[in-house]
Image 1 (tube, one colour):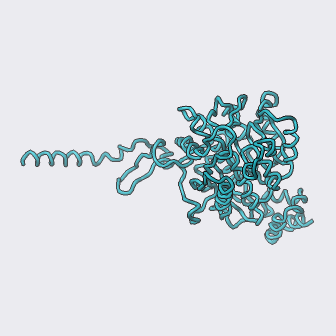
Image 2 (cartoon, rainbow, N blue to C red):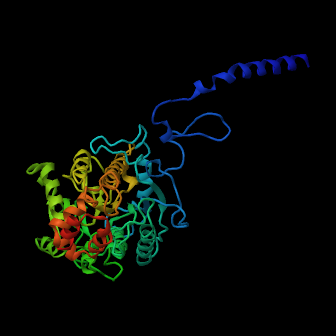
Image 3 (cartoon, one colour):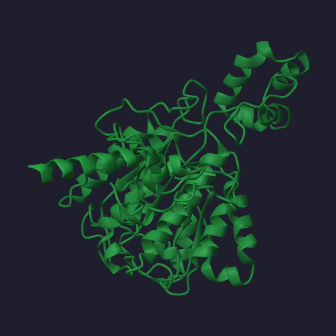
Length: 444
């Protein structure tokens, strides 16, 4: 009995002696701990949330079941589309969304600041979340593509967290959030473009890939049925036939596939694409490729970005359905992506990541996550999709009371006003606040 009392007394004294040292027990202290540490109720301190533990979301972003509730507001949302029954060679891209999330675990480990783009997509004006995955059937491709379109459109068509009341580039004149989709094989881009078309109309496309993906169904796959005619090599052909693509403002980059013949390139031109072959990096360099892409799509019109991970050489991304040697390095792709700064990206996807073929070091899933980190940084750097916004997401006015960007449009680009009813409406709404000289310039 006496021994038990002594033992209890000793434990109490140890506890009391240790109680004043709690603050010194925080594992790591630093300016970025709030980004990857959680304070738990009742523990009186900071609890480490390691990059290798917890539930996986892209870049450890907050998760919300967006398809089950519309209560949460966001400016940029990640959504998965685990579909791979449109592949022609190696399957497994249905596991792409979860693999990419795993590969993104350490993106904001040290704060997430993107040095070349001088922005932090995890600590900015934008509310960024991970919405999980769209439920996709594995037994009916037609229904699966319908599910992907409707799921994407549900996420896309809501009011954003920032500037939800301001005019935007959507067909209805509203500002919408951006959506980044984790594939999935490349077939998913067709339902995504259908969703985009409902919101924006025909869209300009930047397509990073080793393959054209504009093949006619009879050339690629033989088209034994209407459902089978839509696959990861024909979806852009169908998109062109359905009027989803803006005329002659689309571009492929990284192409190095074999063809059925020269007619494949001819057909690609009919679909509205320009081609940058992978080998051009040896002649015009990364700067030349960036210039070609920027000249093709411009800076003002809405643009959709689609990245097939097989753009990369298999040495850097082996885990994909149809690998092609002779591709770009991860560094080259990231540099080219950063060169798209200022382009009006309204949505994006990354596809054909099949983690089962990856290395133990997760080369492919990490490369995919890093590519999306650049895309996310571009979107954040550009600012909200509302009109009258500068690259930092804040309203910027000239001395005349109108943003410099829109003043320039009104004065020097009457063709934009004549072809853009939203621009005309915006000018008229602001006339009362503009000085007389700006008003007269916009209305002449």
